Image (cartoon, rainbow, N blue to C red; front, side):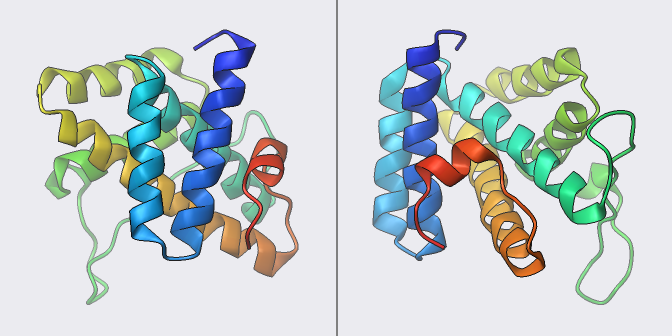
Length: 163
């Protein structure tokens, strides 16, 4: 989605989904997801990338990292505190994590490779799961940024009004 009108529509729908998710309105969140699907063939892919980019930006802000050249990483733990290997994580969650890291490190080919893995499953619900993971991180990061007095990406600020 390179066209600015398409990007604006995508971000507007994502803002609506973020609003709905933040307010706990599952029906409206699902409605926004359905709207995403109707935008274009690659709208879900584009939505995952937009949200992952916003998430990387918010993570950098919360961690006090500069925009470029810093390393983003994630540590995964079970509820009991024991570490989880990424290869043992549910596939859509694993892909969402890898996309976040690839976006955060400026590796668009790796982002595409991970999204292709999801497409190869040939189950439309799988991309939806990746989007749900990414969206829920966005909600959590927006709340964390609000609590820490850190800015959120301007496009989210202009399209997601609740909070």
